[in-house]
Image (tube, rainbow, N blue to C red; front, top):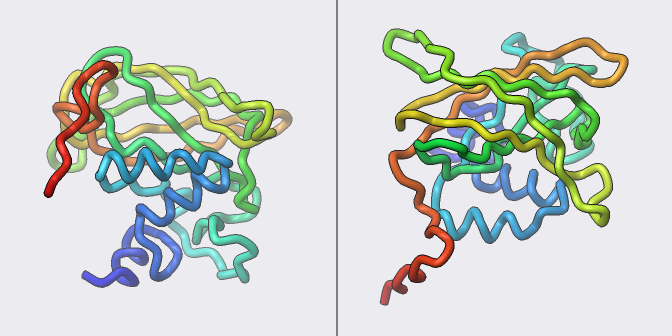
Length: 196
């Protein structure tokens, strides 16, 4: 499957891979170091959220992070962490963008985690509030972070309930994969051997 078909299927800008999209998202957030993390993980990032399945008239894009199908006033989200592993007290990262691809730092965010089952069913496993974290040098760029438990590996989903000040709540749904073990070396563990 070619990059254009893959991008179309995953709701990405034409010709852009998921890895390139996440790299742009992290750079847009001022987190260029995240590209090193993506490279170190060697894993495919998760797909962006489908905000609204109904087609929206295509507008000229002002910025490469404008998500296709993001209607005026709607939020879009990206999961920058591509290495989620089963276990307790796992850190879950989420980036929110407005319809102009600008970071959204002021939303109240509630997360509901679902284990995806067979035949299109899902089971609610946990809920958590997400807190926005940034650095003074990044301004309004940052990530929402929540702690949760993933009690088994496999396909999962998250429902994001985001409410901006003075605005109405919006619900976004994203799918992601939880591995049995993280590919990221634990703190204090030996460095992976280099391939020759």
